[in-house]
Structures are given as C-alpha cells and as structure tokens.
Image (cartoon, rainbow, N blue to C red):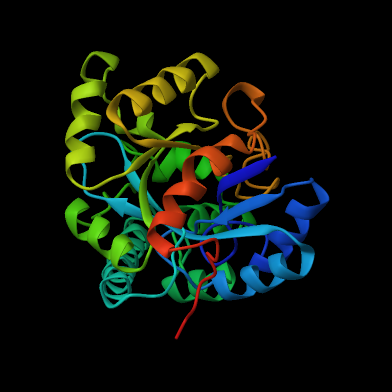
Length: 293
C-alpha cells in the first residue's frame, strides 16, 4: 500500500512526523507523502525516519487556494528544496491563518465563551494552527462535548463564529511548487462543489493553470466517483493520485492510512505508473530527497 496525502502535528494531525512514519511502517505502507497544510516543517525529520525504516518518502505540502465555491486545496508532491516563492507563499498563508484565528477567537468571546488567543497558542502544540485546534480546545474546556460539536455549533460555515479563509492565488502556488521541484496536484476535487456536468471544463481550466495532476482516490469520494475522476485525469493528460488524508485516528477515525474511497486500498500504481515517472523527469533520476539548504 501507499499513501500520497497525510498530515502530522506540524499542521493539524495528531502524530508528529516521526511517529507518522513509524505508524505507516506498522501498517505496511511502502510509499508515503507528508502533505501538511501550508508548512514544510515536518519534512526533514519524516524523511530521515522513512530512510531509516526503508520507506519511500515523498516530501509535500497542501496549500489553500482562493476559490469561489467549496474548497480548493493544492498538493505539492515531490518537493526537492524550499524555493524562495514557496517560503513567501507559506509566510503569506501563515499570516492569513493567524488573522483568521484572531477573528474567530473574538467572535467566540462575543458569544461569552471563555477563550483567549494566547491559550490557543499554548495548548495547540502546532506550528500551523487552524479551526481543528480551536475545536479541540473548546472540547478540552468542556464548552462542547466533542470537537465536531464545536464545528456544528460555532465554527462551520453558516455558524456564528465562522470566518472565511483567504487562500493563495492558484498561478502563484503552482509556480512556487514547481520552483521547489514539486508537482502540483489538486487535492480532493469534489470539495470544489462543482457539478459533474461542469467538472471536465473546470478541470481543463485548472490544468491550463499549470496543475499537473488530480487526487482521484480520497475518502471524500465514493469509489464510483473516484473511478470517474481517474478517467477524467486520463482524458485530460493529467496524472492521478490516491491518498487517505490521514490526520490520526483520534481526529478522523474514518480516515485510515493507506485507504481511500469506500475503503479502497491505495495500490502502488499511483506511484510506479503515475507520480514517480513524472518526478523522475523533473529530478533527472530516482533521487527524490528534500534538501533544506
């Protein structure tokens, strides 16, 4: 099995990057990509751990993109180094996240909820903080029973403490990923909330923006939908990938490492026949290691 979409505590996962790789080894994962939200901080330690355990490691990132409906997340897979444009993009997104978190905390305080931004920073233990950390804190303080209830009552779109997120420009994100030696792949395309009737046209436009692949297999898509997405990628001349979007069993128990749509076991063809050949063309060989220099 392989997994080309996972998260660590560097963003909103529950395992640190080394623990994630050890867990992947226990679950017989042979190839794994670390794709934390808007950060590459977990890559060096994960890469070293994977090397020690004999796992093929794919350095990556997941970037939030401006999009009029739903969500648009862009994976950067196979990063070779931290290019200047990527670092600038990460700093921009970090500032946007901090601004959003402050606004959410203010809205919660206006609801007479005892919570502070300083408390959030202290309790989160993460370098990239988002709504899941706020939800977890609300549960720890007994304001809600479970983190999901915090989204249902306060943090989800349409709820009283929701604040929209400012994403990156697609063209700039694509350029930043490519400058760093990676391949831009759209994560979970169905989250865009585009109808199937318009999906081909929309994905063609996204491809024209420089995106080279789409994540066909993801827990958010039914198996029949994943197969349609893989067919669409083939028609458009894009690579297709598969990932669990694993955050840890304590966060999303339904997302199991190495598995995607409808319990589909992610096989290595997404690596051997799709992503790896594309990376070898860019990197000029089979060495896909990441360097922070």
